[in-house]
Length: 206
Image 1 (cartoon, rainbow, N blue to C red):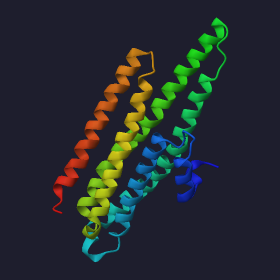
Image 2 (image 1 turned 90 degrees about the vertical axis):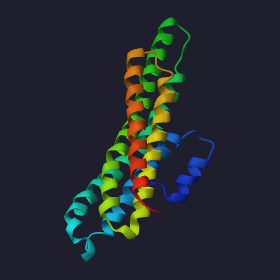
Image 3 (image 1 turned 180 degrees about the vertical axis):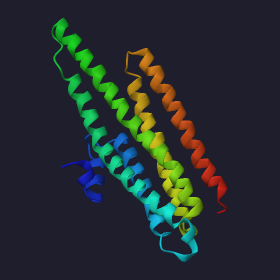
C-alpha cells in the first residue's frame, strides 16, 4: 500500500515507527498537501457568497489549481520514500572487487542525486502555490483568513523541510558543479518562501 493511501492514524503509526520512511521528506510533502487543501477550502468558503461575488471567478480558477497541487504533493510522499529506499539498496551492493566498488559508487551517486531532486520538486511546488495562497488570503472569505495563513505557513514548512533534505543529499554528491547549481536553487527557494510568508503575515492585523 502506498503511504498516501494510509489513513491518518496509519500514517502516524508508520511515521513514529522504527523504519526510516516516511521521514522528513515525506512529511514535508504532506505539509504541502495540507497547505493546498486548506487553500482550496478557503476558495470553497468564498464561492457562492454574495459579499465575494466580484472575486468568485478568480476563486473558481484557483480551486482546481490547489486540487492539482494536492495530487502532486501526495505523490511526492511516496516518491521521497522510494528514493530513500533506492539509496539504501545501493549501499547494500557488493564491493569485493574493483569493478563492484565502482558500480556501487556510481549507483550510490545516481540514487543520491535522485534523492535530492525529489524534495527539490516538493520545495518548488510549495513555493509555486504561495502566490495563489496570498491571493486567496487577500480576496477570499475574510472569516477564513487564518486558514489561508496556516496554508501559507504549511507551504513554507514544506519548502524549508524539503530543502533540508536536498542539502543533506548534496553533501554526499561528488559532482561539484551539480552541487553548486542545486545549492543556489535551494538558496533561492528558501529566500522566496520566507519572503512570501512574511508578506502575508505582515499584511494581516491579528
